Length: 426
Ligand code: UDX
Ligand code: UDX
Image (tube, rainbow, N blue to C red; front, side):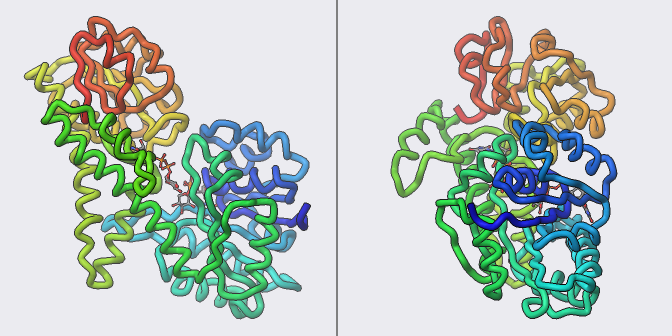
């Protein structure tokens, strides 16, 4: 067993909580910090306040190595290294909003003023190339009165966690990335990940920051590419999913992220691609391909409405059922969910929307308080037409006979038995 370290994690959202719980599982001691007292209390109870399979169990199992507080200073002073995992949202123009990460750095900096020995700050949050140098270094140095890389460590270790299987993704990752500027921080990262047998890439801070954006931009591009091919396939009466089965077996291409349909949502892809586009423009580079990826993604939900109108010319006063509200299955996260533009369109057509999701209804009510919400998926099936927006497992076992179904995610049973069935890309 490598050194057991003491780690603080600033920000107990999806990324911070999963990261901390997994490090505790690996034997390290973890102090979680959040500005929200509810989040802090939730961590201590083993209930982090969001749905992610296995996270509650992991927090409870390792509770003897876990503590939580609202006080950054005490956490930093009690630990060897601090992960920053606060959210990095988008500004209105798509660029990266660094307010929270700057604030978190200032709080860590104030604590660093009092640390007697070496302490390493590790950036987990997704930040554009150059952000650590331009924003974090000045914030940390100003508030600590110390020099980055000389008096304290600063490095980055981006995350590649998919919500819904984030624990598995953390513990069995394809690779870890260490963005470093000095050896002491590199050694801390090597100790933290000593039990991982995957490739470990050691690179500069800026390159590591760019690896994260490039990964997400490529995956988003693969999805929009699959959707554009899917739209052509649909016109030709070809099932694009079968096409990608044949294409994905080429080892140069690979089978993943070819699930054509209504496009990508979530807390990362839309935000990260827009931030990269904004950065490219700032640098006078025209991001032609990235713009197209966004534009295909924005038009996919509309194709679902167009297909519905093929069978129901006037949607006014029609009862339309929506199955799935989270941006993907196994999460209650609705950030940038494709259900949002789809429901906006239905409402602007005058439809009465009845929606169901196994776990995301409460979150969705904050955006759409006045549509009706069903207590079960079966209840939604009583609508005049049903739109499948998220591929939750339970939707794979419903009785779709006699139904008009427009499917954005390819549920086989619906395709086989619905009276009228349209797939978006098949
Ligand atoms: C993460 C990130 O780290 C982000 O950069 C990445 O692109 C997506 O994933 P996420 O875990 O989804 O963000 O964030 P969220 O669920 O919004 O949680 C952030 C947490 O940080 C919240 O609990 C919030 O209360 C906390 N926070 C925010 C602080 O503790 N301090 C702050 O100053 C700001
Ligand atoms: C993503 C990245 O995969 C992860 O590495 C990164 O760190 C955070 O962002 P996440 O957003 O949790 O993870 O989910 P992911 O499984 O990648 O799905 C994102 C969106 O793309 C979902 O809306 C999903 O439905 C959609 N998607 C995914 C497709 O439409 N087709 C696909 O083939 C794959």
